[in-house]
Amino acid sequence: MPTVRISKDIQETIRTLAKQMGLPMSKVLKTAVEEYRRLKFLEECNQAYIRLKSDPESFAEELAEREEWDVTLNDGLE
Image (cartoon, rainbow, N blue to C red; front, side, top):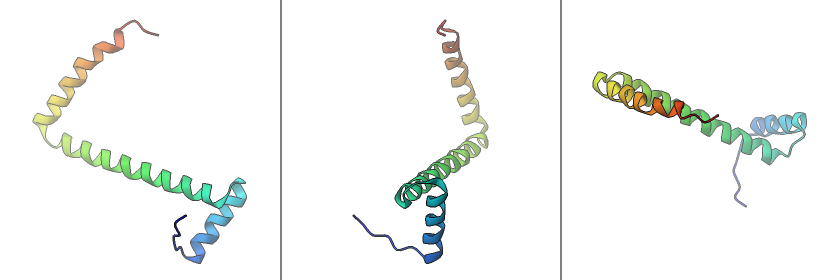
């Protein structure tokens, strides 16, 4: 298993969280990394959307495509 060096204060934070949550330190760290990965993904998505909106022609194409897909909402499925 790989080893990652972390500072003592971070190790203590992970240990404290693990105790509070009743989880192994590895699970706390895995959860934290996954949350950070998701946060970064959403930040990138938001930046891409901002870039899209700054290009009126591309944004108009996006809106037109959404309208085409909107008809699938009325397909009668519950």
